[in-house]
Length: 269
Image (tube, rainbow, N blue to C red; front, top):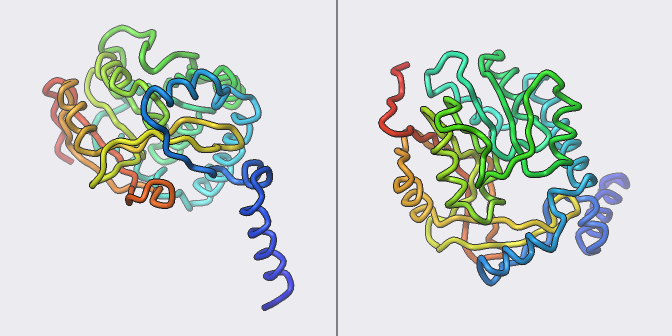
């Protein structure tokens, strides 16, 4: 084994074995199953999580690398699937609201992969995230808002796109109903972690150095909640691999779902 390779291998082992280092250097680490929603609510109330400026900066930096690769013609699978889900609606220049937009990177994804054919707005409950989004995309609308209490009228957007945030929303049933309320045509729940053989679990992990809540859904429960909220599943895609077996003892994956709202139909392509 060559010396540089050996050094890298040893370095990875040292980082993995040292809590302070792995939390500082790895995007996701230290998964632990929570007792249930009460513990998840308590953790959410006591932890800065996604509200931290440091966390927002680290996540933004990670996604800037993905955006750069996309612009070189190498988009990661989840970015391609997000664009495909929006394109599958068949809508020309739709009004799209991203719930849980973080630093706004999906506005760049849609601009690049859909040639800007989306009127994009974003909301996030983290002021730190929205500040970074406004700085990066000054011509785009970004607001601080709670996914369970969106500050918009009914049917305000053609598409509500939940971009990798449903997994962090403890009151997820309320968030689903709010998405349906403000969506006139479609809802997209993107890269949602799901079990096919186990009930919904609440977990905690360190994400970009901060403790956050994460949810892996029983897919059957999630689909039932969506149906009760007035959504009809039209398409689904396997998204970026996401397996939390080491923490839960059950295999998981992530999937993206395109739903129609209140009888909307998908245009034939």
